[in-house]
Length: 115
Image 1 (tube, rainbow, N blue to C red):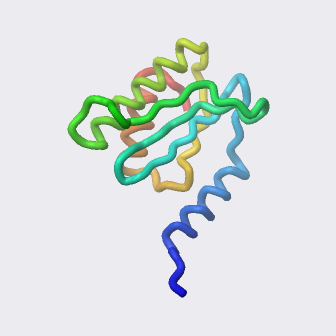
Image 2 (tube, rainbow, N blue to C red):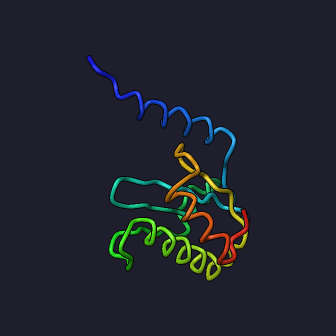
């Protein structure tokens, strides 16, 4: 039976990251998840187990997923400012820090989030 090696490697990377990265109320975790068509990000307080805010690229303006990822980074940073969150811990979810994940993170940083 054929195993999906790519998904297993991604799950291993994500588990390794999660042992080191945890969010608090003062510094929540910015968690990124992606598919071929969308990118989803959440600000999570792991101490209380609650999501502070979330954003998805579905329904956003932009021609490509890269454009929508930049818009999502800007949107989540403005929502974080409204909730009085300035610093976060970035959890890339086992994805490599390139492409749309990097565009999202850079847009969030440029708009005021510190990580």
